[in-house]
Amino acid sequence: MLEQVMRHVRNYFIREHHVGQFSISDSMLSPHDFLLDGQRFYITGSFLNDGVYTYHPSGIRDDDDKEEIGLVDETFDGVVYALAVPPTFIALVGEIEEWVGKFGEAASSPYQSETFNGYSYTKASGGSNGESSGPTWQSNFRSQLNQWRKVSIL
Picture 1 (cartoon, rainbow, N blue to C red):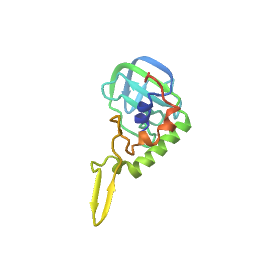
Picture 2: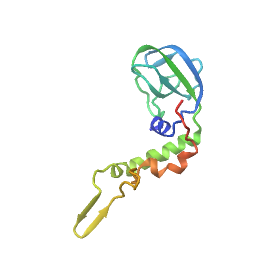
Picture 3: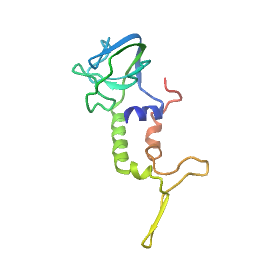
Picture 4: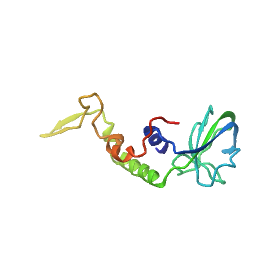
């Protein structure tokens, strides 16, 4: 979810970038001497491993830093961006994940209204400009996400 929210606000919190040839072997990136334990990084230019990850000397973790993942072995010419993601942004992503866990299924439901046994329910639908005004994490957290929004991704 972290990468999805970063993409939405067009902000990867890039601190520095490293261009060159990189290899991934046994779920470890090489070279990685510019990464600190617990630091997130973003791989681009890879055929098999593009995305946001967390570096740990014991193994690379997924973009949410919850579990070790198996990166696919490869050598590629690309860019590895060292990120400096603020803890407050990570906490906000946690709130978004919690909201999606609670309401995400209902928000993506194709049913706009139901009636049964005298009960009627209507879900919010698109606004006048064609955009969804329904309950999505993007609309629900818009004001909190706006402070992190950038004009372009990189």
